[in-house]
Image 1 (spheres, rainbow, N blue to C red):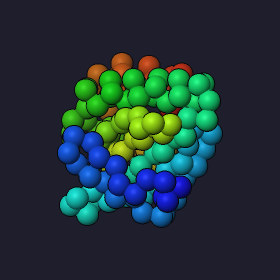
Image 2 (cartoon, helix red, strand yellow; image 1 turned 180 degrees about the horizontal axis):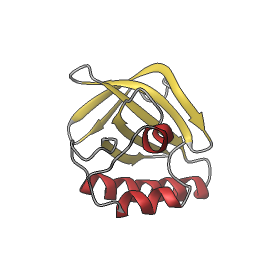
Image 3 (cartoon, rainbow, N blue to C red; image 1 turned 90 degrees about the vertical axis):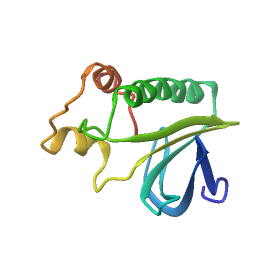
Amino acid sequence: MSNVLHVVCFDERRYTITDTKLGEGSQGTILSGKDEDNNCVAIKIVRFSSPKAQAQFQYEKFITNKIMEANDDTSGLCVFLGVQEQQEWGIMVMNQYETDLFNFLFEINFQPKLNETPAKSGLKTGKYFV
């Protein structure tokens, strides 16, 4: 997949995709990347193989944008850096962590410091990330 997109841009920030696959699921592939300051990021890439796949990504984009609006660096939640659609692709960039999102939220001693409503609404549906 890294031969399709090598660089993604959000708000004038550039993220370079490496060829290291972090995970894969029914919603897409998560690849490792670097920002302009050489920090590690996770880049989720979803191919819109059907209208349903695009609608699912648009729902995830809606939830992610709500979390981004409510989140700050001290909230205890993962930090999303951008989410967008480019032609037949959905792209999401977030800080890269040592664990996957499920373990980060449920198996590590997680104590959220922000209003739980945006996170709850996305996670309770079972349609959140890979």
